Image 1 (cartoon, rainbow, N blue to C red):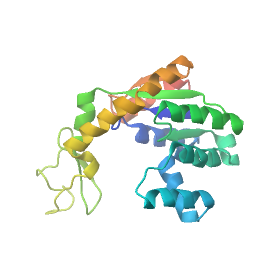
Image 2 (cartoon, one colour):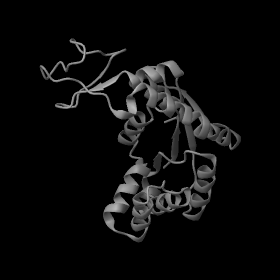
Image 3 (cartoon, rainbow, N blue to C red):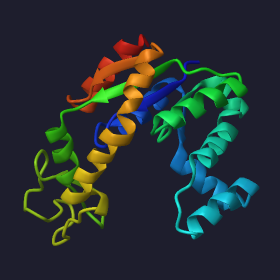
Length: 217
């Protein structure tokens, strides 16, 4: 089964489209966030290393994240079903570490898919997002506003909330960090002949159809 990495800025739809791909074709969604939480909960040696980093207020190192990813990709279910990596790699050094660990476990990367979306649209997708704390409904002040501004349609009187990650200042910072740290991955995978570009502007169903065509699946 083919193995994929999804690239693109925050708000490009990587998570949504990744879930659609895995549900449709059976690839295993490998999220570094999920891996970190699972190792912490397991009490393993690697989990204790992660805990020490986090308790000290530091970031989990590239080397430690690579160890966790290697452990997950080395399991038998990955070889049978193929993987979709989410959240790793984020930098060129991480991509180089991924190349090395894939060689160690006898796997290879088939495609790095880049979802391209205009910066202004990305900003509106994230900064306009509002959540209902009662029912979990998601709205967007630009594209899908509630009938009464600031309140959930399904839960009368319940005020919508904005996640910390979605406030305008944070959104701008996230996009700037992507350009600085993650965008260089585009050139890395283009040089290796693995990059596939997909327009992430249309609704998810249309974008998924374009993705399927681009991957030939």
